Length: 262
Image 1 (cartoon, rainbow, N blue to C red):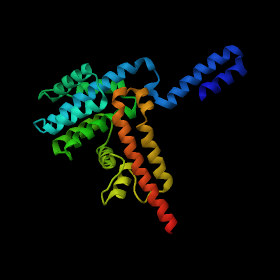
Image 2: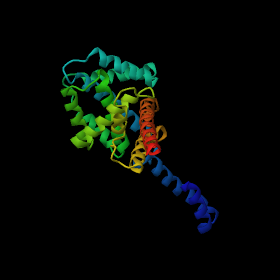
Image 3: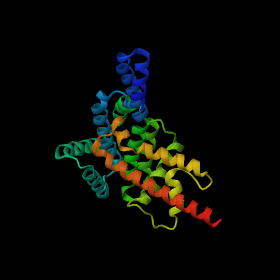
Image 4: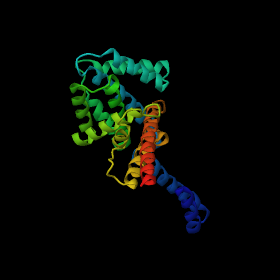
């Protein structure tokens, strides 16, 4: 939008030369609005994607090993994760090697986190998606054990999350997973839906819609790819977005029914 406005403004101010200048400036504004500061330079995209991918699988390995052993469930989850991503055989081999590297007893995660922050740190979305992937990994066997949660709190702290903010994100992801497949049949489905959006029954319709739109923006494929999430890793974010949509639809339906009944 701004590139068109910029071109028009440039024409009226500087003539035909201003069209190109205005279009260029408008393109920068459009890219900033779409991808944030982390996506301003498209030439750095491949670097961000590479570091993001490396960090995810290395920390997955460290998380799986945090309680002393890598369980069969965790190995199966990583295999399913790679299959879901549609990774090429070469990328799968690289991901497995990174996972094993992270799972080694003496591996220090902090240099890798430092590198991630240096390259991907300006994007809050990339930091949150890294945590989301790790939380999903930790919950692959149904719950987080104390060692896994302790490690995730350390990683979250390095990414700028307070313990309280991490707990809220953990609760949101856990409850979003209750809506996998497009529905939840649990007796507490409505309560789960509010938690999935990080809101409560006391919030107004407008506040709930704002939380929903914010989450959908965070999981938006084009925005994530523009900031540095590899295209093959977008499938997981798409699933999370579908779960958020299902949770929001349930809340909206319930509130509409209550208004009609009242």
